[in-house]
Amino acid sequence: MARVTEASVTVDGEVVGAIDEPGLLVLLGIHVDDDADQAHVMARKLHELRVLRDEQSCATTGAPLLVVSQFTLYGETRKGRRPSWTAAARPERAEPLVTEVVAELRRKGARVQTGRFGAMMSVRSVNDGPFTVLVEL
Image (cartoon, rainbow, N blue to C red):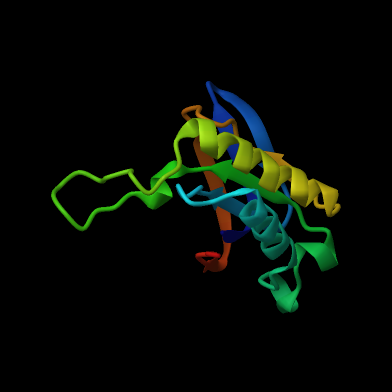
């Protein structure tokens, strides 16, 4: 998750999600062991995490989030020269959980933009700080 002043995601030359004000760019990886309960906890954590300026959160400021699914976050590179993706959830399991994180954020009143699951996406961001943290449950 990165604190940004703006961010966007483009698919086939079309901007499919963008935030044009300070907020969070969330690169969301789903682990093989993740479930709906963890999706809800992650949404709450992202919404309430006090990482914006002046120790504020999206919940307290109404700042937007751009959520982009990214299975490559679980790439294992300790052995050999090619990453292993065995820790990343398969698409049929991951997509509903990404959707649930986004839905739960919206239920909490968050303004959320998204990428397109499974698409080749071009992500652009202007980091604020830079300030980037790994959020794990």
